[in-house]
Length: 388
Image 1 (spheres, rainbow, N blue to C red):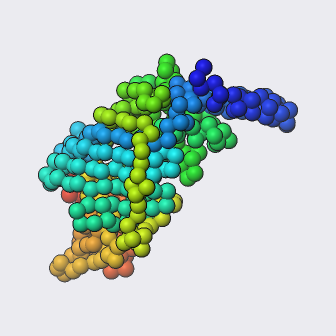
Image 2: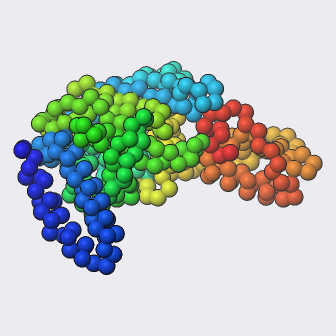
Image 3: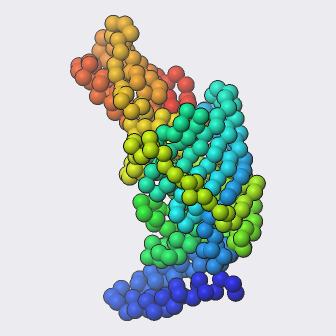
């Protein structure tokens, strides 16, 4: 088989290393663990083989053109209603798979919240990222770099290649639900991210790549990249349809129209402007609000700041509107604090825990003898209820 060479070393290693473990204390439990680990690795091997094996490893770069659509369930007309359609886009990506670098030019036709056409380019490198538009280039926040790096890794044809090169980080994940299906899966600890890779039972190709993310309304949620419409590119299998889903609800869909294997990439393709070098942010680590970053980008309402809810140099503050009426301003959305005789009422709970904690502390400092008794939500959208 054309991919046999890439499979042999790991199988030999399994044969040499795993039986020795079974001789240690633990007996059946150890043997079961060994069998489970071997099963996980073999699932990944089968999937790698299905994707093209050696040809997949030889795929060093891609040039992609495609179209995209975006939705936001947290902006629905009624609570738990149909996700709001946000808009369409076309894109062109130059992707250095081997170097972990990508440049994507976006042409967005936004329909909601305000109809607008936007053109910009996102360049993501292992150490930084920047955005370029008609006004110039600007360094990304650390949380944006981290989120986009993770999503490049999730969608990369090299994800399984990397997993098989790090077998100690591949573990069984049992069967996982994807819609109405139950699919075999493995987990892959990739740096600070654990991806769960679900496999199609017939083709052995990856069906979905999952992470557990914090949704500011639903809490811990499955965030899936569901892969489909596979095509042979440079001898390897590449998915042309990429559907991104939160708890099975689609929030984005990318469709590749043209894919070129191993295109020539100019030396200046990923050149970093001097202005960006001076202000570049390293990828954020720990407590990255992935869903907030990604879905606010889909909404074209992302505040590109590591403060998350207010721009660099900004902050939340209390503003007197009237006696015993305080407005919390400075964030992406506001709270209102009403002080009555014996208690406080707060209107709206924007974003999530970060802003709510600030508001609670500020209310206690301003009105130390009055407890917060009521929270009134003006509407159900995620940017006004995520901190409830």
